[in-house]
Length: 435
Image (cartoon, rainbow, N blue to C red; front, side, top):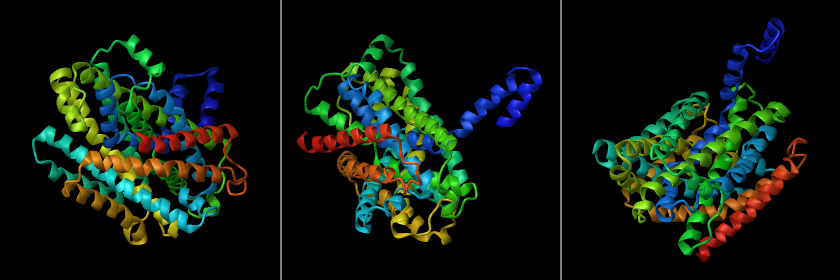
């Protein structure tokens, strides 16, 4: 592509419209694992967390979007580099540095947290579908769960990746919803750049929830796993063929991850803004679920805003649940050296797909067990809050090993940023106990 652009420029004596269009196409074609991972972070349970933050505290936590973006981007790029350079997923690379029992603990904790999260996401999607259709939400829990598991097992990687990239567009619903409410942009800008003063246990608890929702362990495993899937899709089936990455490949992925994580945090920003404008400013501060937020939006913000918010919940659930079940499957498969990959058929990767199907089925069962979704998300936050900082330490150890990283360790600045993120996540874990 680059050669054809250069040749055309040479013949015409300057840049032409075609190369510009080519650059645009190349930009969007470069978006892949980073965009999908970033968008998957805004799952229905995340939407609920951000909605509660806006309803309870107004715009006082809008500034957290600017804080979490660089932290999330650096962590995800580090995981991407591990996958690209070592040719293995995160657990596969960690296996070279840590005893097996450590990986088993990581994988088990991840599976438990992800299964609870899947249950919460299915409940959020089903509630949204019930609002739109009037049908009982339990039907939709089964429908969405079975359909997503079937598609993940049946479709090949390139098909799944393509679908997930398009589903990411649904997140613009939240941006449009906020803009349609005509906020005072001067006040919004002020809240976005000036941190608010801590105002009690509720404020601290919500800050911990936002950090735990944004920097999530399942995204670490999914990001690295997708880098390996991308390599396999290009025909590099053997590990030796996947070791190492060119500076251009790393630069492209850095752009991809930067765009994906920016998009994720932008959506978080607008969800908080939407519920702050529509709910908090009208005294509706005690919502606990995305369903309550959607129902409260309509009489205040109008049918259009409520409809966009509700449809968005279903779309992000379709995007997030495969990453939740898939990340746990990657972790177990790499720990126990099972055959794995979304491009393999069920009979060739039974254990890998078995974990994926089990986590989705267990998520469906939890919804029928009438587990309180808010309590479930609380325990998910605790597991992730305790797991994330230890995983970040393990990631730092891996990316600092020049031999394991084929002479391409992460830059020192990135390691410092992830180190700071680790300290922040330890503080968040401590905050769960103290507050």
